[in-house]
Length: 260
Image (cartoon, rainbow, N blue to C red; front, side, top):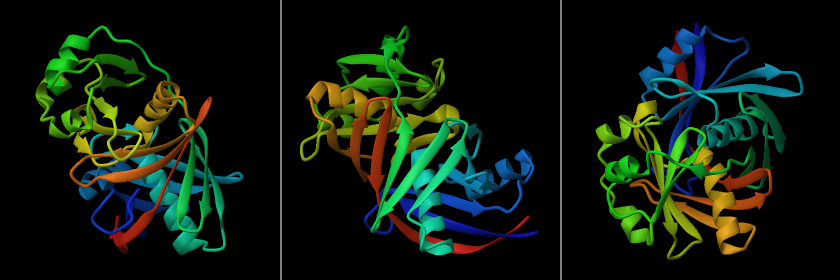
């Protein structure tokens, strides 16, 4: 079987920035084991698969190690492929996912993702997470499947060299580090060894937690965010209460064919 494959740099204004994702459009679903094997072969933070369903498409995401319930950058990459290459007249798409319906709207070259917001709660592993991440976080909280550590400055977040083995030993094995930004509203990094990803370049799902948190802290709905990984990426965000909107651009890096 021959399948089309695309690789897109998401939340990027240029090549070799943002977060690369592979996208494989399907007419019919492959076995889960085959999709997981393709994702492992691609060896990117995420490989997205989508197939037609009802009033849109069913979208699934795989890291090299596991399937995940929500992924922002690979959703943007999928929308980019669909609305730029496959159906260029389209300006809106609904993806059905394990996290519910996800709408993506295109305005020029900007793709806006409408995602569910995530809340924070107390964390019973704050000390272990702080030691694993390093530095001196002001607080550590829990958000669904990951921790969020707050630091005082963007410089501290940029300087972190976490102990990934120690982070993997925690219950969730993944953590956001965040701080106020110098040239933006806030910065972040995301480490996810439990998902087979040492550091994710730009993480849409983490902003489902970060945007409502910083919106309340800063008293504003519209926010400019930067993920300060070595590749880096920019997200234009809005807090809509129970929903988080994040927008960015995509850049096509590769298109080809895989043999399954």
